[in-house]
Amino acid sequence: MLKKFALIAAVAALSVQNVYAGMDGAKKWVNDEFQPSALSKSEQLKEMEWFINASKPFKGMEINVLSETIPTHEYESKTLTKAFEDITGIKVNHQLLGEGEVVQAVQTQMQTKRNLYDAYINDSDLIGTHSRLQLAVNLSDWMAGEGKDVTNPSLDVDDFVGKSFTTGPDGKLYQLPDQQFANLYWFRKDWFDRPELQKKFKEMYGYDLGVPVNWSAYEDIAEFFSVHVKEIDGVKVFGHMDYGKRAPDLGWRMTDAWLSMAGAGSKGLPNGIPVDEWGIRMEKGSCNPVGASVSRGGAANGPAAVYAIRKWNEWLREYAPPGAASYDFYQSLPALSQGNVAQQIFWYTAFTASMVAPKSEGNNTVDDNGKPLWRMAPSPHGPYWVEGQKLGYQDAGSWTLFKSTPVDRRKAAWLYAQFVVSKTVDVKKSHVGLTFIRESTINHDSFTERAPKLGGLVEFYRSPDRVMWSPTGVNVPDYPKLAQIWWQQIGDVNSGAFTPQQAMDRLAEEMDLVMGRMQKADEKANTYGGCGPRLNPETDPKEWLSKPGSPKAKLENEKPKGETISYDELVKRWKK
Image (cartoon, one colour):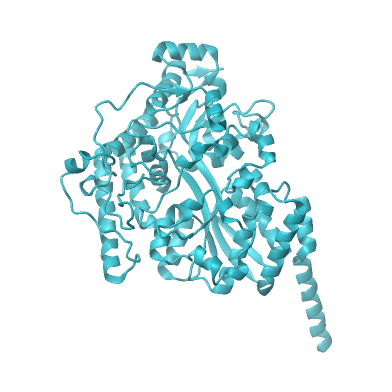
């Protein structure tokens, strides 16, 4: 019997040895996988040695984390979990689901306080929620206190370009960015450069065919390709691409970017102060939202927001390919690779990797040498936009820990989170997913070399313009509750059941009703830490529209003259 137990112990020890290779494993991964890096190999090994020592109390543990399905997280799930286990002895089940399912899981764990996952890569759009509900771990205090023994001394939080997105009104960090991508303008530079098209466009519209600076130019270009050019090299072409399927991602499309591009909010970065891109008002220095309706000082149903929704619906129906109105987010963006669309106002840089796939894989937007025929550029802005406002959305999927997770499991998950964003790993991970989070990675020499094949991605992230793209901010008191209202109202515009004004009036009213319930819960039980909504009394909307700033009064002319800039001039501006 003793021999039997000795044999079992020996087999178990051998199994652990095979899985947990420590420094030998670290050397193998550093040499074979984690190149290039912002660190030298000796610095990488020093960082890995810290992970090995910090992980010893958790060796043999198995933890579960959740994120949405994008290439960056696929790399983490398939490759970095193996590396982490090999180096630390901690097994990670990194599950991938759709964005809506991730939000639902986060909401369920917050509501039930049951530990469904040990950590989440959860969009920083929930920063207003996490900082108010106090169910997520305050990382600033965690790293200095209970989690200090498992916090990497070389984490370098200041190197993260999105840390302002994950900081609450209290100045504390609640989430740690893992991947980041912006919504930008996308266009077929090879078509825009054709002399015959340039000549024809200028004759028709009176200015140069180029990167649109405003929505007037975008609309002219959309009309030009869809109505007047119609066909290029034997292929029927369209001047616009978008989506309109009645689904949650239709709502995110609006809260993420559409209203901010139109100019509905106030000046102020990373989000408008006092009115953000959702149209929610929260006065400077306060943590209490006071309303979304114009009658309460918000802008969700103001002229700029209504204009934005009207243009979205018009362009989708008049200039996009047939069927686009029934596409969802995941169907519309990859459709560009078919090669029949001239431009897209709302395009995520997360799709760069698939858009530089070789021609042999069915990508019709690269040349025979694999160089993109397209470029990305800043989003054009609507007539209500003014200098000093944000210009679009930047997704910042960020590591989030919950207090409902047992401390030992939380510590093990925090080690994994830091591992996949570490300087040892990040440059290589960014080459795979092209979702930059670190300044040291963006400026790495390897991306200078690769930049010509990435269609402007590197130039954009190195430019001062980058700060004008930001996620949902702190004005939104409970993202899961409020976000679900949007897509249903916007879907009613797409179906023709409501006009844009009717839909936005109903949306603003429902947002105020939900925030009213939050206010009662906060006043009764301190549910939102005293930072829940405190709705303004309703007044005549004209009172708010007559004041400077947002909400903004209706413009007499919502289509000023189109304005464009050449792509070469744009890049020069970025490099100054």
